[in-house]
Length: 172
Image (cartoon, rainbow, N blue to C red):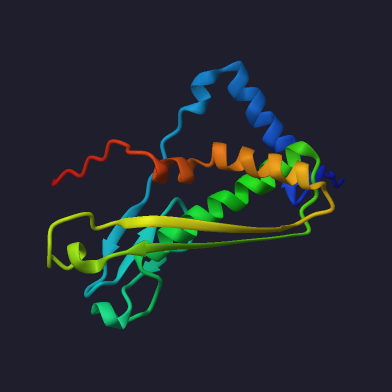
């Protein structure tokens, strides 16, 4: 026997609804902890392990002393923001009954390497991040604008990057 799952934008509507219902019934279920483990592989290469997925390699470009075998951490951060936004569009468009025909999010950021390289004190991270959303849909411009506002207001990665959060880095 096969079962069919109601989807829009390849999102399982019932699964998302069940999660929302479970959290509404028991708000403690909304409190989650996520984790990753990173191993140094020599040079500037690392491997990130998350749950049971294939390991994710990291390296630096040759110009920064790496072997350029994989994206570097700041590039992966841009990818994490773009992916989180894309998931937000898919989830919220589905909830609103909006079909997405095509979606691309371009993310870029400005980073000054002087602090990272120890050449001067200061902020070693991105100074600015920019995301450009390209969405194709038969929905009205107003519906897409509302969708956009909702996604921006609810993106976990976007909120994490936009606000100061406590960060603890312990040496064990």
